[in-house]
Length: 280
Image (tube, helix red, strand yellow):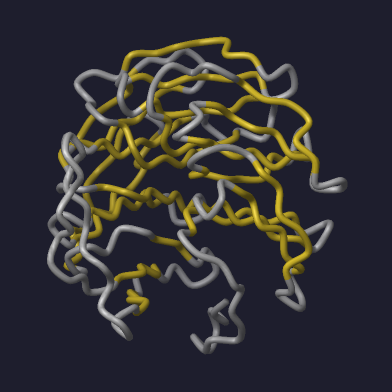
């Protein structure tokens, strides 16, 4: 945990192979998705002590808190499902099963809908957050391998970073593709700052952060392409100061894959993990 005002490390939460973190401020709890035994780790926001672990699937990935249903939603790539967790009881209260492809990032509009990228299928799902049912499936071409996602909730615009090298804006009410613009390779995170009207995409393949301005809900202008560092993909925006935080590390030679498997990234070099900080 980092204090965003002082940029000092103020605590650490034990865990491994972490993918995402969700926060329920009302309950004072945080939720971490981790491939470590396919679980969600629940911790206390004040003490950072681990409270519990909830088994959810084979490969937990995206995770977020939905203010409408007051549930924590976890997206599982391995089990191809969405799990809804009651943060008061730490129990899975429902799932969306058999999604049929590789799931990726997701977001809630906080009014009753979830949006989920199906990376291997090139589609966007709209899901009823209460009934836990897929209500719409929208094709995203020319976007291929949709990955990162955030949303302008006031105007119902979904921002998607595509591994094929484009950013895509989708109308969250109709599925209409509003616009696409080129970005770099290896996108893994997207963030929207509603006060500044800025949309950010981090692309680790070329070590860059792409910043667009939302001129209107249907018009977007590239403001700047900021050089970061190769592999800097995970990103967070401090909406108070406008600073961007990107985590990065150095890695050794790629691992030899098992027969029929894709090549794996090498092990991280000990002591190389760092957080890059960019101002406006």
